[in-house]
Length: 459
Image 1 (cartoon, rainbow, N blue to C red):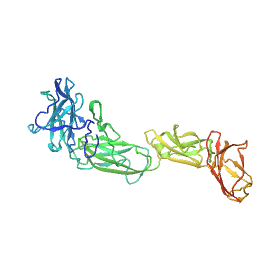
Image 2 (image 1 turned 180 degrees about the horizontal axis):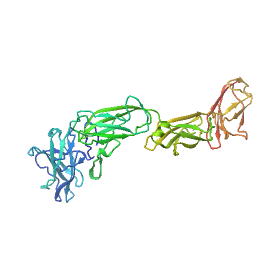
Image 3 (image 1 turned 60 degrees about the vertical axis):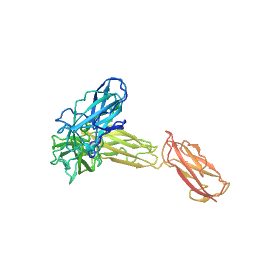
Image 4 (image 1 turned 30 degrees about the horizontal axis):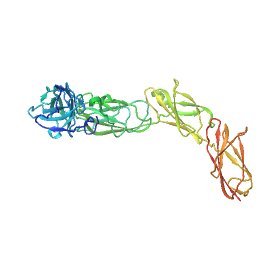
């Protein structure tokens, strides 16, 4: 099912080819069995109602889809015949047939919209025809055509998150929904996004629809306490702070949607604090961080855990969950190894499901090596063709075991670091003019650090 101006029928992939609007009989192929009354009757992909006092309400502006499985004791193709009439005028019968229907498969047809009147209740039944033989008619199903959406948008309010002030977060938001005087309303659809969710009807084996009650999806739908009545929601906002808007529309029995009402309110920050054990943690070192809940949030609903997202040396991220102590605090040990810096993003989770907005902590790292040369100083002009020079590499971080370098974009060469974590290479230019050296270090754990470009000119 999808919910726009009304309930949209989703037909099985067999389609609706071969329909014939007729008052007579449509011959089937040569029959080799006895026809039996169709089963698995559906209308608009919803269950058949056998109670005239409780008809299924359906949107049918594009016609009414009805279907059933024709029965036969043989395997030949048969005809599925459907009759529909107004309950108030049983003599006004419309017959729709599906020729060459396969036994054991749904045989869908569409009753033309021109044969249906908005607000009218209809009965319909199905029959199997095999050659010159016809089964008994099925028991009737009852539908009321409802092509008119609710006239009024719903009324919407919140007693604990007023719209004209910043509210302390931590408690679920209570919303009161009201049909706003429209007695046709039986429920509501709501969303934190302006577009409403779509609930689809699956088609099972043999083309049998699998109807879904939208009100079983309590994250999107809420049934009214009575026709034209009201409902109460208790919702956790989609994010922990800022300006929030809930959109709501009323639904009638055919799931036609009314105009939309929105409710906007504001929630102050409930973010935790993130504190490292040392003011400036070193690159690659394990550092202990203390996480503390927002005090007002903790008093509203105790924090039970944290989600901690950190950057890594490959430019990606990783997330860990941390359990909080009874006072809402927690500690987590992290290794900060982003080659240009590291960030930590933390949200808290309260016992009632509230998720705070994000607290952030970050630090910058310069992991490029230092490059020096007496013969060819950086950004200088010296030496000459055939004049050798020594270039020394030194680390800015610990645990460096090697350096990888290349001159003027040539092949890369790896040189091991000494015990003092430095390395030196000799190079002799064979041309004068502008030259450059690119070098990066690698740690003992295999992390490739940031590269340094060293520019110089040969006389």
